[in-house]
Length: 359
Image (tube, rainbow, N blue to C red; front, side, top):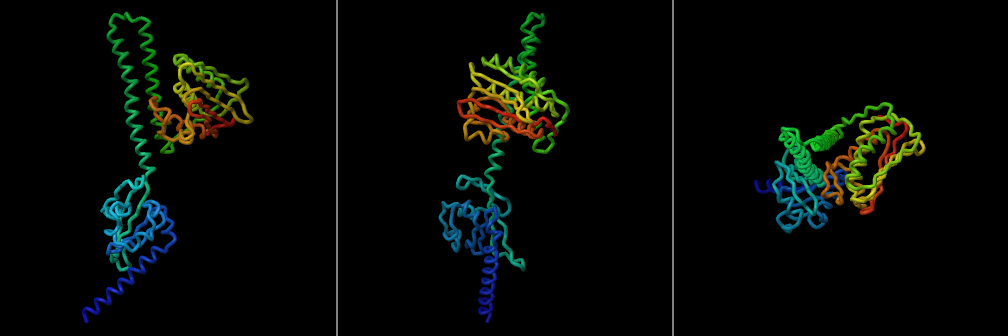
């Protein structure tokens, strides 16, 4: 009698478990989740995979449902996931070129009894790529911030050792270099701070009446010396009658300093850099063109992404934040920024600002 009752109870539990797993596996919400779901019963038998799990693990459900985990081929992705102990702490693993976070939780019946495990698989490849770019950015910035400081301290040592003041004109050159590197350092720090402000939604535009003609004239003149030092043919044209706009002049100057500075940096000796400011309908059009290294078609869509550096830009110093911040500033003014470029054939950055721009 005792054995018969135990056998009856086990059959009843089996039907109960079947019904529970069937309810989960036929739920359309579970099937269409953006998270991979794998259900394994208390006997270690795979009972269900949703569509996302099939994609992540690159396996069809018909090939694994009904099989015990230990019967699955050792080298398969699904065995790798299900054989891991990820109940207490989620684990990350590389699967089929993706970075997957796996976590197991108990599947409970209404009476609280455990009938198996549910494995959640999340594709965190994009997040990890972003973190890797962030780590690379920090490493590069550590080096780039150190470089101008080293130069500045070198010139300061030279001036300090010139007790008799015999350096004369050379001392003025030293001071000029200290100022240039100090401004470069300040610009890097501003980029980092503005990156934080963007992430936190703290970017602020202080709009007032802005004379764009004077702003662009000043910006171009400041960069003309750098262009000459790089051996470039630098010219600019500002059409007469550019209207006043409502804008944050300081922030706009940062944008155009970045665009012109990039054009100079990425153009080899003997190349050309052109800047033009014209009116197009109800907008002011600012174009910065160069004959430099250009941007590949693959990279063009990503150049406004934070930390991204084009493959052609390897070896050039910079934060990788300038274009991201510039785009944000222009869009806060109600404008837009576009790029036309091809690898080895130069770049053309076009900024459109509405005449009534302002945040």
